[in-house]
Image 1 (cartoon, helix red, strand yellow):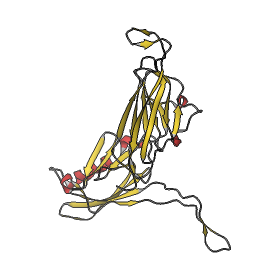
Image 2: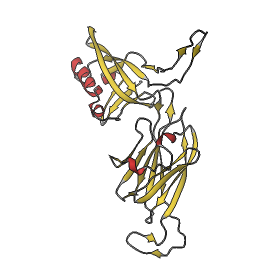
Image 3: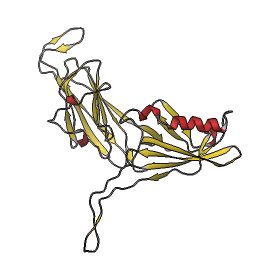
Image 4: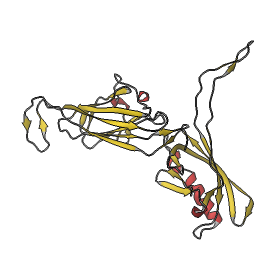
Length: 287
């Protein structure tokens, strides 16, 4: 039973089987167009090829609606259309809905219109076509997490007992762990730095180093999202682009191809209680 899931914010609908009330009449058609800069060479044979880009895939879905759970056909269609509107994400720039295939891989994007076909309604069954517009041409696997906890470097400071242990003259430190990125092509990690820490940094040798200036309190989290459809630095939910220092790498530099990477987290934290969570989804070329 090939079940798909559409998720917008906290709302979701499972479809693909007539047991859910909404079935798929055939395998979804994924179209990945290429925007090219090809030009015909004047007064010569052949063409001039420029840069090619991929604007994002479009997933075409052929749906079949059947009454289920005592609901009428019209009710089944209305319930699906209400969720497919994706109101939870449309009103916020950069917010994405999710289309999860039967394999568990996810495409991010926005739902488009549902076009019902009521002309040939027979036996209390109706069909419709709809489309999901993706942010890119990739499908993402299950999210993997890695947690790094700050480790102070003690350099002969005098330990002083207090409610929160700290060390005179200490506070700088780092920790490193290895993260393994699976998938077919490069992907983009999300870093979450939990305070208290001052001037933290994230270093991925061979990829880039992100340097931040400022202080993150013990109850705050700096979210560094390098995914190409977000590319943002937020303190909790508030944009905080000023934290990213110009001396380091850019967010766009932090993509990771499949492989193993050493991730280093450091900064200034006398309490030794700060931490960083690394979240990454492997990227695949098909569902």
